[in-house]
Image 1 (cartoon, rainbow over the protein chains, first blue to last red):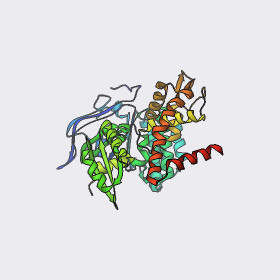
Image 2 (image 1 turned 60 degrees about the horizontal axis):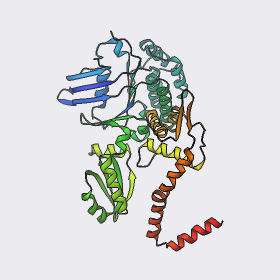
Image 3 (image 1 turned 90 degrees about the vertical axis):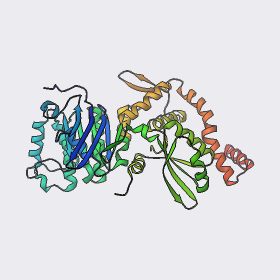
Image 4 (image 1 turned 30 degrees about the horizontal axis):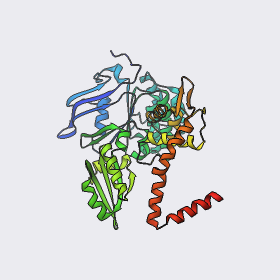
Length: 301
Length: 119
């Protein structure tokens, strides 16, 4: 028996391997989702995101290693599992039942369920509770997923690309609701999404998966200071780049006689490189998480 | 908003400092709470909190327990003092470099400054 904790739990995977037949979805992964933080779980299709979230939600067991929620294995620990909520795009709902029935079912299985919040989110997205889930539009189905995810108020809430079916105004309405409720009721939140630009400022922590391995696990703010974009005359830039200490060139793009390079490196070294480049008359710009993600994981699929 | 090279918390702190320097925020004024700030700009509250912690460290803001954050006494004078130095290095130098690229002479620049002042 686990008693519910007052402060949100930390989620940790230790040396976790998970495979489907001969396919390794996660390969000896060590990663921590900090307690009470919003973490973005980013990765291309097939990188292992959904497998990782399924392990935390105890939908399956790892082939090796340990999954720990608040330091304990949640598998078949009912009290601990009640604290963990995973909403997938597929919804995990009773398709042929009315929305209202699904809401009652969620309320019964979640000790932390908040009916008032559920009602408010339902109203925001104008979901008709008398319809069966099957009859909802794609956008409304996604929105219904966010109702279940937010109103569960689970100490560990994981949303696996649930809001992809929603249009832009609905997605922003969802981000606002998420932030508002997180501020009032802090919890450990994991958001997996392809729409990095939209969620990047909401994130405190970022985990990037690539082919079953953890490529990056860092504070979002630290990550931003580890990249920059420089534009200058091609020949000048080519001459300068090799002289910069501790800086990696991730990509270059030729735009006529000018060239643009994306650089990464330790913040202090990058800052030094930045002043050198500026002094040489180059133009410096920031790099957002989306750029960094594409460069780090980018191979044509 | 927030598209510079600096971390977002630095950009938030800089924006608030600029508001104090320009007099949009005056000493004793209450500023938005971390919560309001996070919601208004759709950013993680930890990011907003980091910006406010830095402003308290720099004595731009002070915290009144249970009430909120306020612009500190003397903040305007202090910020204007350090802002004057930075104006030359961070603002004017890039403009002068651009003027050089454009072939604008120092005399032309001075003539423009005098004309603007007399307006």
